[in-house]
Image (tube, rainbow, N blue to C red):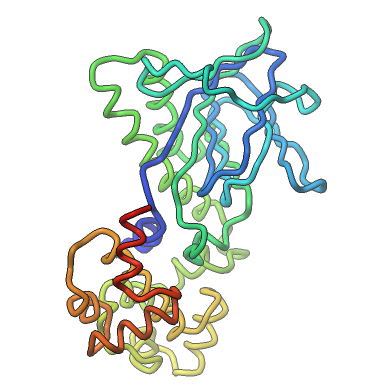
Length: 310
């Protein structure tokens, strides 16, 4: 069971949206907050990312191959220099004839080319794996760092620089995969000696097997004792370790994952409520509906109708 993939799939509410940004100095682009998570990939040239809504946050210098992931889709500015005036992007700047729309702006100075966009993730109920990430993840792929992420960036750059037959299908697939490459690279970048939270949990000899068991079989009658047995620890020692790394006790996380799984089944399938209840560990439709409404504030049927109408 790939817990990272499962966690992201549980939050996804749509396909990623993206645009290629071509700037020539002097240029500045003000990007508003988005419902999801934002990202930028520097394909050519250099620029600065200036966080908004946080006076203490320092501007971030970006170079070719750099990747930025904005966990909460916060508002920010991209510019050739931090002090360059920034303007909101205009829909008229898009050129939809390319595999991805293009925004062109600025003067006649040095060129910078970026891929910018956002992933549609449910921020109302973020998975704790994502919630524990820094607000801004900045990864550098030069000098042999993160070779898989670097390869994805290079492939994207080549497809966008020289669109050919098949580019319209290749580019969205690469952008979709980019999110997993970004998060994998960040988790792998955390030094084992200082890793904490989910960065440590995914590699922990006791907690990782328990998480895998919960994700593989959310309908099983798990108890703290049965999960501790898989981990090879006493009940108390396992509960302390799990809570410290995951951020909540084992049974609370089990309930969270069962409800997350149920919500995805309701959104994405026509499975009857009895089937959804059984697949998430509830012995009756009534018990499931009661637990689901307590968690989401809506009955399962109402949640299904509302999610389909959105």
